[in-house]
Image 1: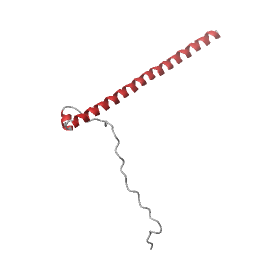
Image 2 (image 1 turned 120 degrees about the vertical axis):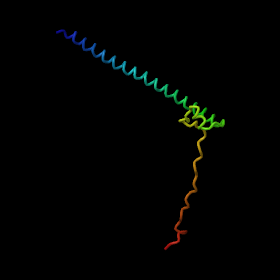
Image 3 (image 1 turned 90 degrees about the vertical axis):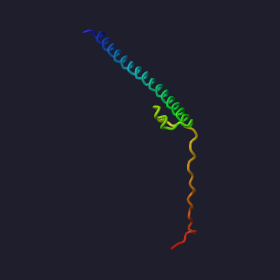
Image 4 (image 1 turned 60 degrees about the vertical axis):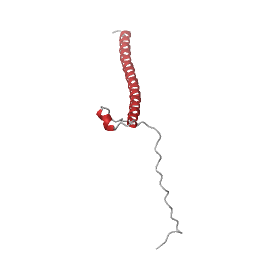
Length: 102
């Protein structure tokens, strides 16, 4: 039994396992990056579709017309200026002087 041979075999096995683990993470990182890029492309395409769909509606096509042509309504809104928040008058606080008691 050669201790150096056993140690070298153990080190080689650990190196192979480590390399496989690092390779798996590298592959996962590449796939994750591809998903991020595809998600960004999809978001851009959806915004463009929503913008051109809204333009078609402003060009006097109806949603029914567009649906008959095979176009579904845009899943995303085109964005733009946010609506103004509804304002309500502040409640009138009653003071003890204004209170008509029992």
